[in-house]
Length: 446
Image 1 (cartoon, rainbow, N blue to C red):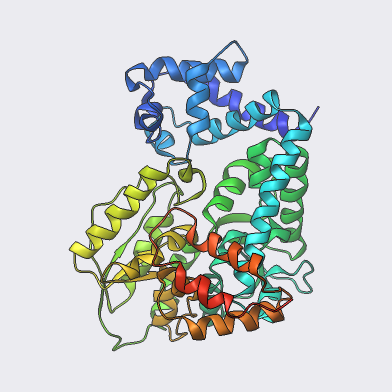
Image 2: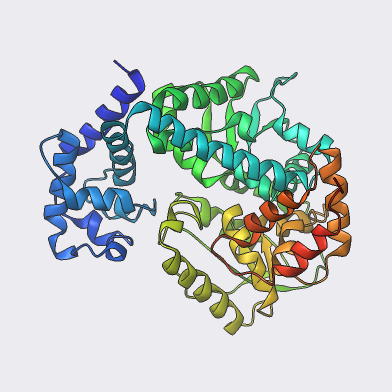
């Protein structure tokens, strides 16, 4: 018996037992229409989901629905029984991997995805952050105890200035915290998705053990995928002695102290916020924080808040729809005459930061605005500078120094890999050519 698989099976079966097959979840699902499911048959399809969970025969339409899920959580919000349908669907997708694919194939797929992520993080973080600063985030051993852990996850290190913005804010508040992140402290999401539960248990368990070893009473998460994966999947299984939640909610709790540090006389900014509803409480918390800035006015714009819990990730299974989400938010922000489009999550920032090349507004993360307001200045956003194209000689010269100090050789293959990482994903970007050409000038001769 596999205790983790048994736990997830019991969780899914508990949801199944409460389900009335009313179909409200599928009717609310933004991806059902993307794959051509008939919402008029929503009750029958949710009945299939129950059969899938019970192992009671074929469920072809429910299987299609499960595979298409992008984690939006619109299903959960619509359920009259209060079932966490996203959790249920995620578990069933994983269980189908376990049933249909050999263990060796599942392990190979999870390992491949993890290696690709680790390689990308190493390259992109290594060209933007000095080695000593990067080592602080990614270190495996912790020498001190702390009541709080700021948990970055892995992929935010592609845009590391956000991590250091948060650390500047926590330092300004006088919070005693430890920081953990990078592939060495992963949430195990790739292993979970591929059904490699042995590796998932080891990876997630190692990260939770690391939180416990520093004596954490509260883990402040950054990454929405880690927040979802730990919060909805692993936390109740592990039953640790610490709470787990998103950093934005913690900063709202600290808002009275933050207000005392806000500078006066900053240039006024009219901003629109790019939002997702899928991680409960985060968008509302960011709106509260941004609205508290004395020099900022929030401008409301029409946007699709319900397609995916974040840009990229599972939402990338539907690239044309995601491109439309990006076009809509950028064009409506421009039409509203805002000075700044504010992002919440790192993957959204990666995909929207290049909009500066095409639209008359700046793109900043909400942590940039807070760091600027408390006088920390905000860390330089190298990723955005690369993504928007144009002049970047100084940035690329700095990148070469960072790469060298982080032990990464800048050869032609690395230039190609970095160019593909930055400009290959769905999103809005400037020209790729200035980045690739400028970085190639710094290639180390063989």
